[in-house]
Image (cartoon, rainbow, N blue to C red; front, side, top):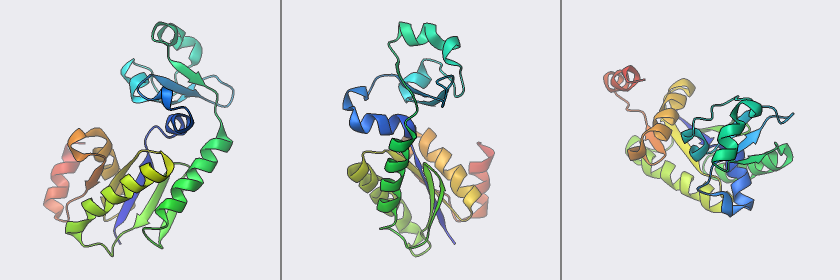
Length: 179
């Protein structure tokens, strides 16, 4: 099999931004059930040094100084948006495994190796257009390697959100050594 891991970027924040476009480009955090800790952060909030799990009371100076937008979790919205993303993904393969609210594995073995990057960019663009949710996609021969590929896709700007692990084990090792 060949797995494509599709993962929503800053998923809870992205869901909030779909319905509040003015939040794009500004620092945003979403808090845990009890509004105690940051459980989702926009890239702008991450750049300010806000870390996953930071208690709100410990980062209030940053929140106030940089006008960070703060939201309580809205799991009904996130579940609905997740369903929309999965429905969109199901158009690309009959073999889809929902892994979490913001991650799904797709079997894309039917796509030749040299066409996988373009295919995944089409998936990425379609999900964004139809749902408003930006995603990263990593492709590999195992679920674990597709997860690693997804991390590369998200961390390296030149990947534009998509990374296909090389088929050659020696090239795979070169990438794994960098992580």
